[in-house]
Every structure is written in C-alpha cells, then in structure tokens.
Length: 350
Image (cartoon, helix red, strand yellow):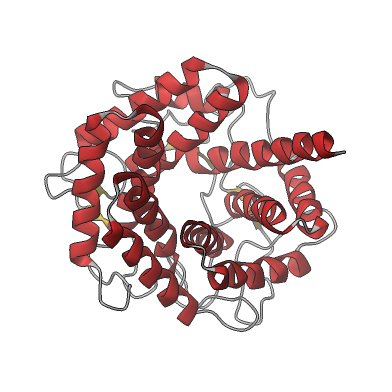
C-alpha cells in the first residue's frame, strides 16, 4: 500500500501512476487501473477504519470523472492529450465509480456512471461482444477478457438502477462462456497471442464470470470460472509457480511467471472458497500468495521499486518486462487482504 500511495502522490493529478521502469521515473497516471484501485482503497479503509484511504479513493474517482471523455468512455493507455476510447478501460473505471457511488453517494459519480454505461451499451453487439471501441493496444477479435469490463457495467447498473446494464453484462458473460473449452481454457482471450493467452487475461475472465454470476445469481457463470480455476490448481506447482502463458491443452508454454495473473488467480481462489467452502481453494490461494511474498521486494532503497510488484518473475519475463506495475501491486494487495479476511472469518467460526 505504501507503494500505491507513492504512485498516487507522484504526479500533478490524483490518479495512480502506471508504474516505473527499473531505473526510471514514475510514469504518468493510468485511468484504467486507477479505476479498480479505487475499490481496493475502499476495502482497506473499511477493514482498517482508516479514513485517509477513503479520501484517496474519492480523489481518484473525482479525477476519473474529470478526464472522462465527452462520449462517456474512459481513454485507453496512460493519461494523454489525444485520448481514444476503450471498452475495457471504461468497465474497469465503472467498478471504481460504482463502489464510490454506493458508499459516498456523490452526484459526480452517478453522472459519470450513466454516461459511461450509455456509451458501452451503444457499442455492444447483440451477442454481448464488443467488436467496436476496444483499445488501440488490443486485438478487437480476441477480447473475451472484456467480461470483467462487463462486470463493471453490471455493478454500475446495480448501483445506478440501470437494468439494461445488467442485461448487457449477462449477454457478455454468455458470450464468454461460448469461448470456453471443457478444460476451462478460453479462446480469443489475450492482448497479444490468443493461441497461448496470458494468465493475466485468463484471470480477468474468471473474475468477470464470478462477479456477474454473483450479481445475477447465475450459478452457471460461477461454474464456468470454477472449471478454469480447478485446471489452474492442477497446473500450479508445489512452490506456487504458474506459467505466464497457457496453451489449449492447459499446459504452460513459457518458463516465466506472470505475477500479475498469479495475484488475480489467488483472488479468484479466495472468492471461490468464500462461495463454496472448499478448502482446496483456500490452500491454492495461500500457496500462490506465498510465491508472491517471496518475490516482493520491501528492502529496496529506491522508492519507485520498494514495495511494488513487477509484472513477471523473473523480472525479464515477457509481461511488464523490467517494470513495477500499479495493477500487479494492487492485485497483490487484494490477494493478501482476501486471505487475511478469510483467516479472520475462519478463526471467528472456530
């Protein structure tokens, strides 16, 4: 959390820095990931009864509304003077605005939600997919991971009472299911190489399916996420290593770990434990978190690196090569908070 605070305090705005190259400065703020860092700060504020974290989340949300595009979308990439709209990024920021609107009730957030949801619904295909409006950094034909953005739209619809948004989220989750193999692997689910998708984007798909499943009481969405999560348990080794890319046979295709995706997967396993009570999920979450903790540098003299999480391990892996990423760090915080919450809940029951 100290690294995330420094990343927010770095710039002239109240967004969170994209991250830092090894040996380089903090980079400009990243609207997409600032959006889903907001709920993390809110959860920690409530867990630790720390109002300063809530204040930071509110600042992030207000900044997001200030940089929201005229069309209602959130821009792709880092903050820049020539923004282009992006579906995924918009859905991620909706997660933050929805969390703030639910707890804070500020009209600014409600207006931002309605504009963003309207833009997403206008671009959505009848089958739930988004072929238009994707980030210029994405392949528009391989965006099954957009289901997490659909979850953001659904949450915003719940908070702002927009039933069309929830219906749109359901359609996208069903589209995501249509791309899933019996072993849990997803076709067309990667930023760069859909033949061997990143664990990061596979985890986005699981998170979206679980989120929409819980929102709409669709057990089949959760079962789809379980199928993938169970295959990942089989793939993870005893030390907690999961390959950063996964082929159609659900075997790893690279020898490096996507720390970002590992943290997301730990969150998924923790959530499935909460939903099912099955101890295999809490054990898998714990093993993955230990793997991450062993690679978490808390002693570095460089404040741009100390406490942050790199995209890959080894750090020269192909995802976030030689970089500390704000979203990797945020997912790590979420994964640890998930485990801490589960441990305290289990202790109370016992």
